[in-house]
Image (tube, rainbow, N blue to C red; front, side):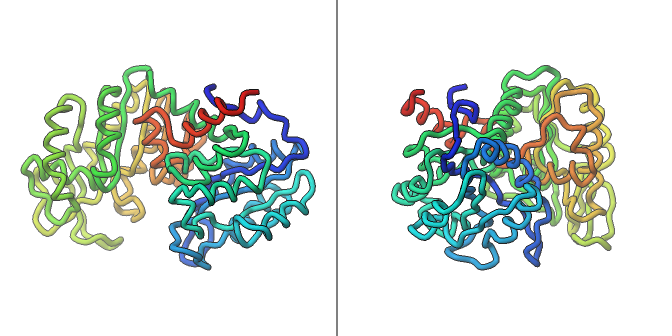
Length: 395
């Protein structure tokens, strides 16, 4: 490894600041709807506790603009207590003398959860003084927040300048598993969904260079259809990206596969009227909501033949059951494939878990955007910070 891991340090009696990714989805009542990211952090936390470290956990939650009462970490602390089966001390800020005092009063193996990092604007700005204030809390720094490691933020990049630092078990696992896509066994098929090609175009191009085929779904396909001159009805598409879509199709025409048929609806609702039409036959006034049955059969057949599969992004508006057949069908096909199967976090991971197929997947990433950027760049800002730290703190 080009960076230190948990096994390189003795944390006994030390205060260890751990950047975790507890940015979990919440419902309208503030209840956690998926605690996977919290669960995945448990091995690192327990390892540090077992060594007799005082564990200080830092995370963001949501996208607050200053202090937001609905995005405090209290709910996270309660769920973490249940999973750890151990008390968690929740503090009301993430830096400052009062926080330092509370941490200094703890004893070995105790766990402290800091308040939402993004309540301070210095976090997202990677402010040097904010990073130093976080570093002042501890003796060591551990990055176990893969899902945030593509961010050039103070708690991800900045802190590693001031403390001996290493990767946690989750970050180490994510790097190991996703790196298997750099030299994949073939045939390698990548399934890409999502709403906007502007969000996915870089990874689509990157995968087109490595994969045998990149098979598309989700709302992004309608920008490609429009670029081909097809009617898309009321389907979502990015008018300012039509030129880009044409260029990508021309450059990777032998690699990129568009759905041959789609499910369209007269409204985006559970009581909508739907019908299946060919890719060039979307009627005016109707909206594309899912891939069609022929496309699902084609995609599923390729999944059966694959040696390597990567999937990120739903095939349609799968939150509405009526429009979820493509996404759930693909999830079942990927799960039954005799291949290395990697799911790039986000909604596709939710679909796998919704179908209760997570135990049949090789690796279900905790990072959506982070996974995509890692596959594209083969590194992340958080990883680079750990590499620089190893050069600075030679054991």
